[in-house]
Length: 181
Length: 316
Image (tube, rainbow over all chains, first blue to last red):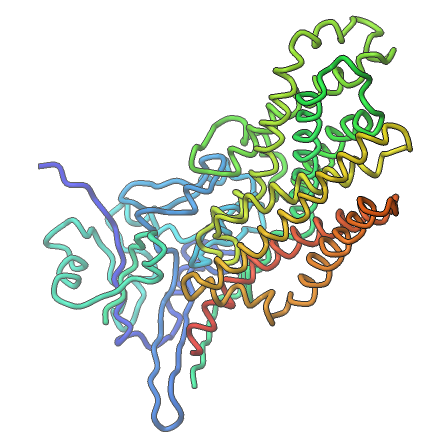
């Protein structure tokens, strides 16, 4: 029976130590220009010493099911690719920056060559059966990637067995980065 | 205490979004103003018909409108990062993209605007030189007037819709923004037309002055509605409105937009209506300054608003 592939990322913040290996792996794999990043680490510390709590978050494009960046793009450069991955045709991009303004996660940036760039879930690797570079390099195994519609996938099992949440879900973008509680 | 650290450092994105600057503001201002001139000129013909001589200040401001729009578009072009790809706007139509709508609307704005110039100047030698263009447009004057009202209004409205469609930016994401920009656009259009008044057609100028009085009042009401709807909305919009209610743009907003751009012109216009105390250039210039300041603050405030709302939420 036909089953639609939907790639998602599940992130276990309890395992993340904020080492930024994912950030450097992404830069290396995707030749991200110096001074820019497709993924980044957010660290939130709450409380007063010695009563503290800390959360590290490996952030990137949320590859939304209802992507405002794609809706805002006037030329069709921003589009949804195979498996629901949000991508940019750089040859169609005018650099109008409407998609950057539309993204609630500020996950896009303007490449020095004049087009908008962002995380692609390493589509070129996924196509040949590999994991995205950030997932492959993570030393604590806190990043999980796969097809959420596959009942045997790691991400499906994690989402079925653990509580999770998404970010800014109130905006209706249906983000596909899931954060394990 | 909460401490939020990020390793993201993308130019134009961090520490807060600042992708659009003065060039986009100039386009939004000129687009709104040209839309306003088109609406007022179209309405003038509907009310007065075409059998009388068009006042020179209407003719001249109409003549300037395609030029002003082209200047605005030039600034928009300057804002594009990949200028060679500008033609891509016209190779597709994206129904979900306000910017795509805006690009295609311009295709209709130019012809109706030029047709109106021909109609308004049909007695001039340079229109009837060859071929006699006036004879071609006269039978369609109602259609041309309607086209100017329609596309002028759409052009001015669009500048607000473009911003209000961004749900990611709480300062922009408000239904009142589009009508506010429409009213402000017509108001700045009327101010621009008054600048061209040369002393003749006094009655028409007085009528335009009364329209102006109504527009300034309507804009003040729209601003109250805009602020109150943000204040009574969800948390991030309540935080965003503090940009102009105690935040970094408070003085600019209340002095430039409300004071200089609306309240002082309202007083000057009232004095003119009641006591014939004409402020030849001051009132229209103040309205133009206020209209530009409104768009500048909206463009800048909207880009800052998400970061302000998010940090307030985290640090609460």
